[in-house]
Image (cartoon, rainbow, N blue to C red; front, side):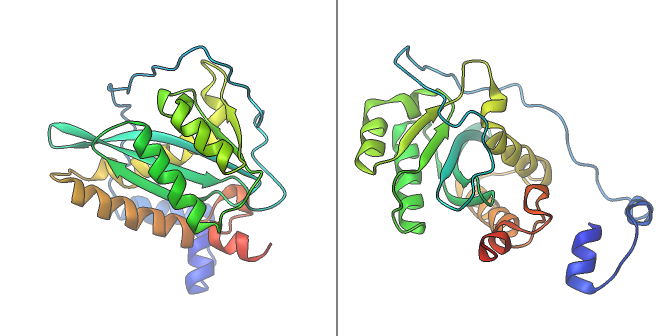
Length: 218
């Protein structure tokens, strides 16, 4: 918050004063309740190497991407959000929302990322071992695009920590503060948050620059 005030308004205050002022405003606290629902992981036992090995800071854009899927409650049902993040800048380069958590969701998100990044090659693509990512169809698409597939080890969520962290803040700062009644409401909410995240939200991994700004300095 101090960084945003200084960057956008030229106001320089300490973290302590920012905290006191925000406390006086009685802002609603972020929800930290962990949802009970968890999508099933139906990964098989085919070869899944961890190529990335938690190297979350590549030296340039389009060297390594990570991806993950999370769920969002819509009324009494769920929809599913897939994102792809460039690890260099932590920029969300593609996202898709679907009522089904299937390979098509991941494929559509990947196609969008390829188009948005002008079809790079020899990029490491890291994810967990969900069946959507281990499917023959998706593996063949990565091979065709000359991407190098990488997987988290079983039971090691920290291997995909960047995607996990993005979902954490998405839910704390946006999703858990809203109630959605249609998938269209979710799409608008997620789109607005990702735009804010990419173009306005300071990121600690980017020396407190927002992702797009960090890429522009490269």
